[in-house]
Length: 175
Ligand SMILES: [Fe+2]
Ligand SMILES: [Fe+2]
Image 1 (cartoon, helix red, strand yellow):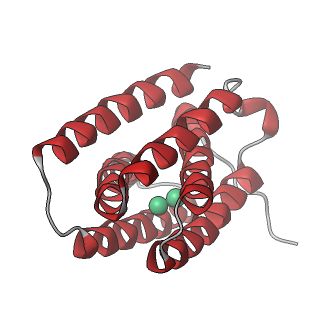
Image 2: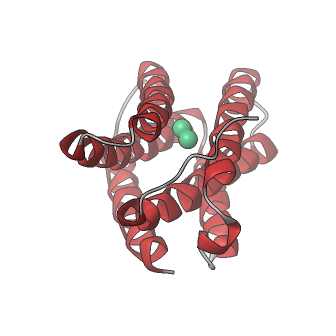
């Protein structure tokens, strides 16, 4: 059996927000799968859904249930709407949504990796974060390759996503 990975207390709020975020991510793709019938999008969403489910499982392995966010239902609903709304507007909206979401997540993980690099401890945990971030970056790049045209309304939606995600991180670090 693998040794249980210990999360230092200063990283528990971060991991609570990671858990909330990965839960949201799973629900983004659940919604896209549900509301979009395009073949290419379906396989894109299926693949990402599997990766995000793996991320969530991994975090659930190391973050005890009592340390998780109490607002998990809200993160599920928020994720679901973040996937459902662009699905109504089509491909380009979906790809740009994923681009904005993953750009945010990349920075979010990078911050934690930097904290651990500075402290020069918890290498195993740092490796986990680096792996997670690697997947998010490839999701980001993949969606960017597929965005054909970023219009002002995509950018506006992207701003909403970034500020919504920021708020969700702040809240889920606490509750
Ligand atoms: Fe993820
Ligand atoms: Fe992702």
